[in-house]
Length: 124
Ligand SMILES: [Zn+2]
Image 1 (cartoon, protein in one colour):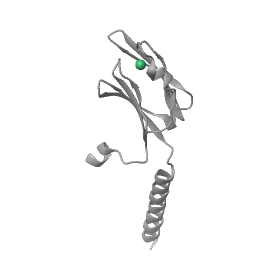
Image 2: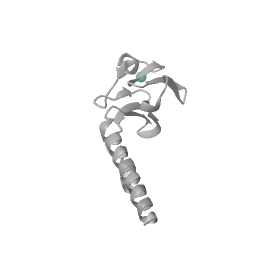
Image 3: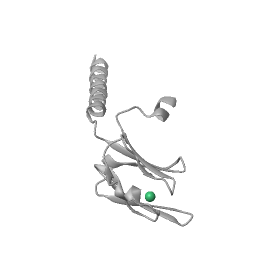
């Protein structure tokens, strides 16, 4: 009788925590992940929602330099040694519609919402 009580209680807690986890993950739409690509290869992924303060990333490659500012609400290229500087002029992006592209350096930064299921999580 007593064991049955504990099983009920524990399964109740378990179900409740599952429900909370499910609700939490589906109700938090504005969690963004920044992906930094160089020559089409993903070199770094930064979860913006976990940032407590803005951080910068330096991408150095064959004398080419790009400095990326990552903030909770978006990403911007703050410095680049490319000739056109279009990536810097693009300013801050806050959604996945338009990635920041530095064509001369082959750098692409795109944002992705965490709410869409990650392909690698499905494959596992
Ligand atoms: Zn550029």
